[in-house]
Image 1: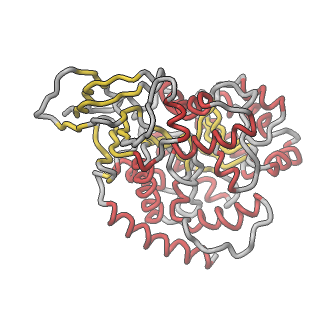
Image 2: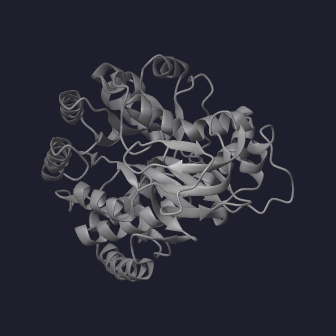
Image 3: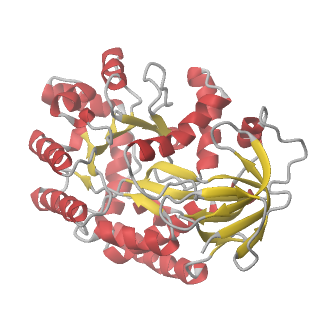
Length: 422
C-alpha cells in the first residue's frame, strides 16, 4: 500500500530543486516515489503543508554498543592517553556486554537514529564475551524499529584466541545467512598478521569488504612501525584491505602523504567522525588529498547526522577550509556508497518530513545554509523507511518507546555493575 504526501515541498537531495507537489511513496525495498497530481484517499495520506520533504539520512560509522554508556560512572583509572581511554572505558564496557544488553543498545540506537531522520545505519560492533549471535541480535532489533543496516563484528586479537575465532565465526555465519554485512576489524594495533589475512580472505569469499579503524591516534602508527616496519595504510594495502569497493576506513587522523596517495587511489571509502575525535582529544579530521569517497559517521557519540554534519562543518573550516557543499556531499556520500555497492534498503522511498519553522525564505541557492545553521533533529516529524512510516508525529510507530527505554535502563544498570566488577 502506497503512502501519499499531500502538498509537500520536496527538496531534491542532489540538485536542491524545490518542487511543490503531492508525492506517492511506493512500499518495498528500494521502491520509487512519484510526483502526482491526484491523491488516493483510500490510502494513507499525510498533509505536508508548510513542511519540507527530502531524502532521509544514513550513518556511515556507528557503534551501537556505546548506547548504554550515557551517564555511567568514571573508570577505575583516569585515562592519560587514547590507549588508556580504550582500555579503561570502551574495552571494559564491551567486555561486559551480554546479548540482552546488545539488544537494548540496538533498539534505542535504532529509535534515536530514526527520530533524527536516519533510515540506514552502518555499524561496527564489539562484544568479546558475547560474540556468537550478536550480529543477528542487532539486526533483529533494527528490523523491529524499521531501520535498514549494514553490520560487522569487530574482530581483534586483544581478547585472546577464543574471542578472535568467534569473531571470525560470527562474521562468516552472518554473511552466509544472506544478511548484508562487512568484515570488521578493530585496528592495526590489535590485529596480528594471521587475523588480518583471515579477515581479508573472508571478505573475498563473500564479496564483502573490510570495516576498520585506522590511525585514530598516533599510537596506531607507532605500533605498526615498531611491529611491522610499515605504516598502517601501507600494511593494510599490502594485505588487500583497500582492494574492496566496500571497504570502509574510519578516522585516519595521522596519515603520511604517501598513505594519503595510496588511499586516494584505492577503491576503499573513508569515514570521518569529528565529534568523537574531539571528545577523545586525538585531533581533527582532515580529508585534503584523499579524493571524494568520504562519508560522515557518529562513532557511537549519538545517532544524529544533522548534528554530525554541522560539527564537521564548524571544525572543518579550521582544519581544511570546508564549505557547505563539501560537508553536504560527505553527508550524502553514505547513500552513494550503498548504491554503488548494491546494498539494499536506501532507495528513493526513504524520506524525512521536516516541520521546519524557518523565519526566512528557503530556496535552491540557500538550502545548505539552512541545513547547517537552522535544521536539527527537533524538526524531524515523520520518517518513512522502505515506503513504511517508522516515525510519525515524532514517535516511533513500530515499537513501544517507553517499554524499550525501561528495558534499556535495566540493562544499563547491569552493565555498569559488571564494569565496576572488572
